[in-house]
Amino acid sequence: MVFTAQTHYYTDNRSLPENRKDHSFRFLDRTYVFTTDDGVFAKRGVDYGTQLLLKNAVKEELSGTVLDLGCGYGVISVIIASLFPECRVVGSDVNSRALELTLLNCRNNGTAAEAVLSDGFSQIPYTVDAVISNPPIRTGKQKVYALFDDVHAHLKDGGVFLAVMRRQHGAESAVRKLTELFGNCAVTDRDKGFWILRAVK
View 1: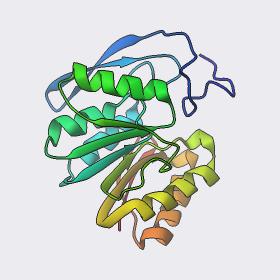
View 2: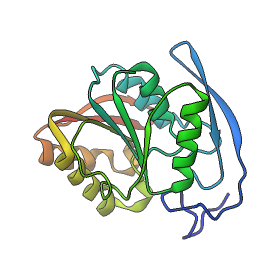
View 3: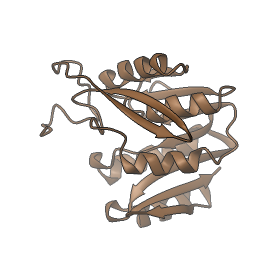
View 4: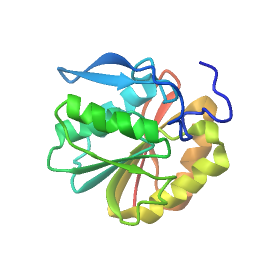
């Protein structure tokens, strides 16, 4: 599918014709099934950046409220909710179609997460204990860095931010930006051009 200005995955795509497909994904000895659709990120299955992000996220001692920022069809929300059932997991996205799929995928995989229609943190007035994100790089550096600012403002003291970025899409400069904001940023994993960035407030 060729995205137009109206059909980027980071816009509201509820008007697109429905074209749902199911994809299985095995993670830590469990098989999950995710329903995807046109107009959402990685509709052909779980992308490698998200897979690497998940491998690192599950190593964290997650507790309290965990925000899956830009959740897409809910891969991170579903898996974090299944592995950390004591957490309140919130998936947020600007794309209402993605949020419908997040709730559907939670139900179909026997997990529970909230889904919030929000442009960044516009509809998330509370603070959280962790933010996990595969940020929408196609929106541009200015938008992504503004998102980083908001992440810092909405994290509780001691809260962790995990993000995945490609080196060719500006991971090195993102490390510098996050270090300015948080006073720290570690690259905890690198593979196939993807970097996992970890900052603690």
